[in-house]
Length: 119
Image 1 (cartoon, rainbow, N blue to C red):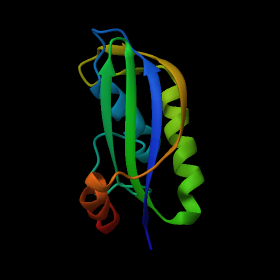
Image 2 (tube, rainbow, N blue to C red):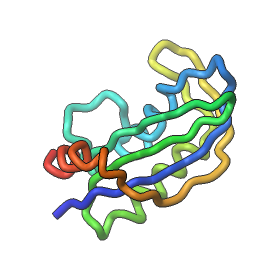
Image 3 (cartoon, helix red, strand yellow):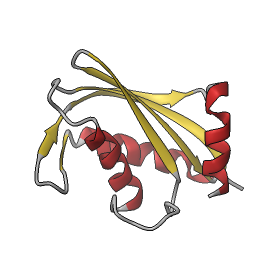
Image 4 (cartoon, helix red, strand yellow):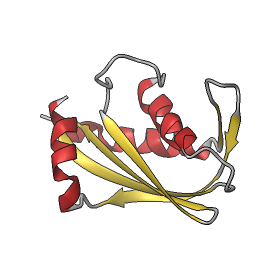
């Protein structure tokens, strides 16, 4: 049975960088493509970026089997460590990975997490 988890990461991305590229990179790392039918095969997920100047904090909520938690976290970090992504429009977005680690699910995220677990 799937459980919900949170992974937090921090990157540096210039102000003109496309924040959507970070979520797309995570999706590529977890699903192999950002254009696939739902649900995500390994871990349904949601990435929320929050910018403060050039620093971007990411909260990735994901649902997976507890035995796959470490694999999912590793793929998220590997995707963000790549430091760039070419989007479907051909534009390259770049960032610098600063670090990542487990986070705690906020009560306000509980319903979203339930939907991910059920997908």
